[in-house]
Amino acid sequence: MIEKLWLYLQYPFVRYALIAGILIALCSSLLGVTLVLKRFSFVGDGLSHVAFGAMAVAAVLNLTNKMTVILPVTVLSAILLLRTGKNAKIKGDAAIAMLSVTALAFGYLLMNIFSTSSNLTGDVCSTLFGSTSILTLAPWEVKLCIVLSAVVVITFVLFYNRIFAVTFDEDFSRTSGTKTDIFNLIIAIVIAVIIVLAMNLVGSLLISALIIFPALSAMRLFGSFKKVTVCSAVLSVVCAFLGLIISILTGTPTGSTIVAVDAIVFGICVILAKLKGRCI
Image (cartoon, rainbow, N blue to C red; front, side, top):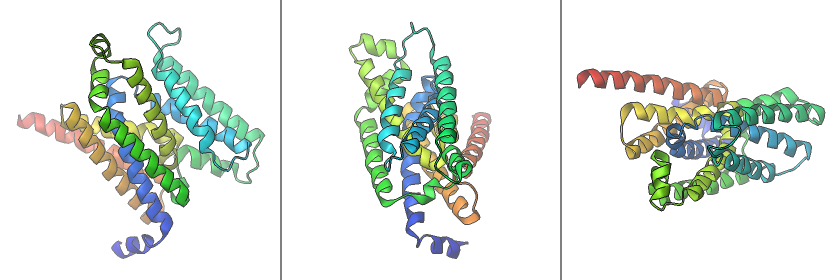
């Protein structure tokens, strides 16, 4: 098994997949805790479907670099969703559901009507479930992933205290002088970038799991925001690495394998939390 893995590592596309996968998992975990605590767990699901719709539009236009359409559309949608006020006629969860199904439906409709691919089913499956896309990354895509990941991590570190405050008590943060709208905007943009990056790793339908599972697992083990965030990042990276290795060695779908590993680790964390509670 080790010899087989070493053989695979000689291929550039495998190394690209591991680098991109680890970076995407790290970025996804950082704001996963914030989304769970702010009760926006399914915003990743909604935005991933928006990204799918934008990708379909880019494919219909035959754009070489689809990121020029996917990223701005997803960022705009994230801003609209996370900045929806309490007085909005369509509340947060309903807005996410409506946007999600609409983007998914129109995206698939466009791909069927204007498709130029001889394997439409395979293209849709790869986009939705991340079947092979992470293993077909070009060098420029890996470089873009590194740059965007660095931006996400640096932004999170620089504004950690403000993100912490906005996460736990937005009203108090606003009255104490914190410009919560600006930091909600930053959170929205960072989440959109993470969604776009994660599409290549686990596909549109599984992105929520990549964001939520590490956060929920870490919350079973720790109580402080900082410890949960650090633990979430570690678990996310380990699960992504193991999932990629298992997928490469066994030929299973990459996205599904990573999510399955995340789910198993979550189950282990639940058991450990119960054992810890009994010991105390």
